[in-house]
Figure 1 (cartoon, rainbow, N blue to C red):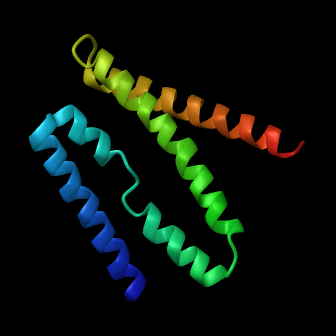
Figure 2 (figure 1 turned 180 degrees about the horizontal axis):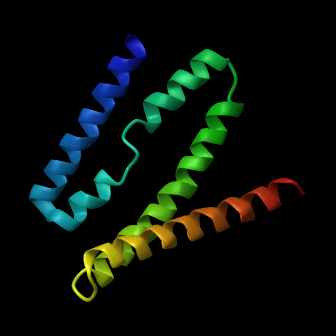
Figure 3 (figure 1 turned 90 degrees about the horizontal axis):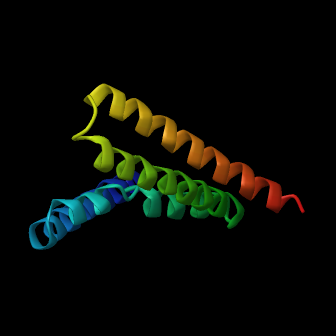
Amino acid sequence: MRGLAARFAFGALVSVIAGLVGQHWGPVAGGVFLAFPAILAATLTLIEEEEHQRGPAAQDARGAVLGATGMIAFAACVWLLAVRLPAPLVLGLATVIWAVIAGALYLAFDTNRGR
């Protein structure tokens, strides 16, 4: 129960911060904060507590960073194409962009890690 409460509280906090940023600097800035994986910090803490080692938490953090980088590309694609193309096409293209970038980063990282 404690872990679920920590995840819920952290997710709510990130949402409130995104709302405040959006009110002050506009919806584009607020949207960037909503892209932040809201449960990442709580999840990493729980993994480290349970595993008593940094390895699994570090792997999750690495994967989250690579996936979030792909999500930035997704958001940029939607932002650039939303007014030019139909929504289903834009979302499909953005999804492919996300998968390609996140996958390429994963493969590049995994290749360098083996050396």
